[in-house]
Length: 357
Image (cartoon, rainbow, N blue to C red; front, side):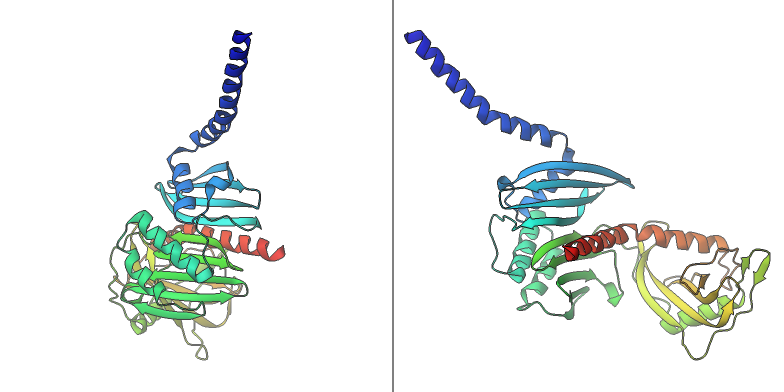
């Protein structure tokens, strides 16, 4: 009888131990297939976003390689009071973008904040502690000066800080604007929808600068574009189109921004639009000049009334820039915005889904 009781007790202990260990084994099994980036994503959600991940059943939903050393990791988090999906974007194993969407219920935080502004400040403080990066210090100082979330723009050194509000969406953005040049590639962004965090992104060091010195002024950029236009032509079928006239009523526009060049580094670039006096073959109403502000190299592209570029074989510009350079410049610009466009597009899609609920 004593042996039977001992056997039963041992069996109960084994069963209880098994019931405790099994969930841990399943959790370990789920996480063991994530790899380093999967672990980084979970650490980010816990240590930066501040989610109480211990209160959630966390499932790795997908891992999607994007090429160019990029990857998207998606987690599904479910608890008794809320569910959500987290999309974490990586480049070269660095997490640079995180979206939280498909909310249901209230998120469970390890240390809840009193309001959106306090949460933003707490999150940035956690991020600074998480990375221990010096570039976050002036960013944190700028946010500490804010007492109310309202539209604003301020600059401190090379950091431009803006807050925008669009309906229920509130966005805080810090941009590295060296010499005041607009730079969509080096920035930190937090976006909220109805008080809940939707996006946290940091591309501050994702791209390096090759130089920010602007050697070509706005007036010089427009003049160079006008001179290049005189030697420019494009083809529509067998027709060679040239001899353009710029309209007087609408002056040329010129925007300066940092853009990627073939070497993978950022440089200042003028984007000049010349508005034509009539519609040319191919429904062309505008000529676009892409001009590097540090070298003066320029390329011309014909733009249709619908805003699309017109295919053709452009002739060399007055600066000696060939059509091949134009194609390379255009391709470089398109490739350069892949990360930013994909991030913004995903944000717009997520916001649209939220608004449709």
